[in-house]
Length: 570
Image (tube, rainbow, N blue to C red):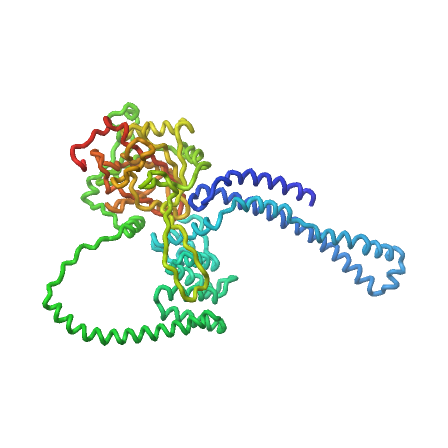
């Protein structure tokens, strides 16, 4: 026991030193790279817990041995008490046991072996993920479910494409997702996940949750979506399990009343429509049919379709005009003997990919430099030009009847990632990479922004946006004093098992991550006008860990490198 007590404080110090690297970070769910630190933290905590269990087992073993010895002794002694105590040694040992040894046993029983484990847990808890992290990870799952059209059972059973480490969700996990959606007044996802929790309970999965609790949320979520008949059906099922459930009894009467009211209104409407139908039929014959305008797909839907690999508008004819080549940028001296493999990804806007453009060694060095500096990603405020944390607030109308639990409004994530900025002062290799970009693009790097490294978190994404400042954003990048963003260079520093594409919703283009490659496009025409077809987005990462780094190249210094065009869209 003494050695155990000596080891635990040492373990505390080791854990504290490991955790100091986490202390500066929050929003763990926005970076898979930083979440890996939490796995090691949990592993250390499990080691501490096992040490505590071992100490408890040692203590119990000593108590058990004492109890077994006395059990045998007292059994013999009570068969002939006077004869047993007639032996003077037995009499002495009885006095000694009751006066001394039982006191020692009491001290052993009362001895606290939790100190080391509780100390470790207390140290680590201040670095644990917060409620925001748990909620953020849960909402990421819901976002992935919508974007990639996954049903709750597919996610719950862990049957995702490209998965190496399959993980099953328990009833409690499904219930927690449903509750988080409910708190956000998202009754659609509340229904999906409460229904999944109920399904797993019906299949016999053991759980601390009961069906009554799940049915309470499920029936209410369905009612909020306007399906009174199904809400009534689940309420009746709840009452079969708990006939005295006060809220369910109230909801039963309310739903039945509303259904009767609804049926009566429908009957009245049917009679009215018959009369109206006769008049409308006559009028339609007189009127000419109106031409139907082309259906416009909302950007959000186009974005999600492209993320799934649907709706890509690259026809065979257009694809036949895309080529691959060895590229030396007009015989650049650094590229003459080692031209770079270049392939066309898209024609309008023109997007090219450079293959084998960054080595594994360089990638690991960049990640090593960036990881301690990763902070929640920022975007440029279109009005002030100041960088701000990437999120926007949503609001929804509250429901008002028989709510099982009061909810709160939360923040929806516009960009879920963490980023860090690296310069040539941090490592000469960064300057080498900057020079490589300059050689291939022919553009000046002195006025470009520093290399931004980004690691995407759970369901990490960056919703549709422009890299350049529009005319209605006169102060965009004003603080930099280098003009607008003329072009974007994007390194892919990891492969992604599923999801994570860069998509251009307006033109139906999708570019998939490929480790060691980079893509490049101009954000501005040669005239300086913005190319609105470059509006793009980073799709949510479904499975895997996405690392990218990008260079935003600005107008200043490009006057002789990219002369101004003669017309607006040249």
